[in-house]
Image (spheres, rainbow, N blue to C red):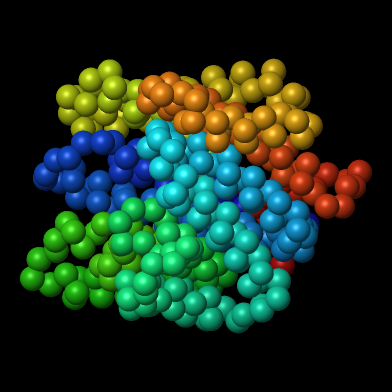
Length: 366
């Protein structure tokens, strides 16, 4: 018997809410800034859950079908990159969709062929960070360095792969271990920050030890809290955002950029957080309703081929940055609502039995 695991949706949901706090393009001091720094670890929770859901797909999907899907996932996902940076250089930077593709494929191979014991997942997460911290900046430039290592911007393989494997450890270990790990990370963070914490220590791209410890504190603490909860209300807002987290990614960013363009950045930051949250929820409901009339047209390969061409062509043929953002947002939202259909199209072995879609989270009951 299988049971849907709502705790993972809840973890993704709180990650979505934290993204709003982290992405508002304002700079300020005080307590709100502290909240924004902590909220900046939202991708860690998102990637951790992606690692967990991948392990649940190993016995259901072939690597070839996943590889084909996630290549397209990464390419169409550049629509998200282009919303942040509406220019051709955006294709050179790894962002959320691209690191998810690399992380998922890596976890699949590890889980399928290596089958490491539980504690090795924790050690592997620390090893990934160590490679970033001690080796990455010492290497000369080479063609794939912008994918593997970074000191400026982008979610590169090192160190961000740590979150995918740490999430697997957090999901499989006992909840008591999660609590102990969160407390240990918190104590170590307090020790290394003794004498005063600098904001520069919590820049996520060129990850520091402080950022790693904050990430582990939030990751293990988040898994502890949400796995401790025995039941969830179907109307829970976090579950809604978690269930549609990829659509949330595009919708909230588009609204933040639109509000900033309209000059609403002068509002008090807490009001901005609330405004974006409410409008994102309303916008997602409208988009999902409209998608009921569009989804049937995406059950064939041709529309997806056109989507790939569109994502790549838009910054090449449209000179206006606002129009690039608008076009890429539309393509990204359409993709976010229908990527399960693309996943089904990429399945190697057709079957009359419905294949579980990639983000579905189930676990075997004892």
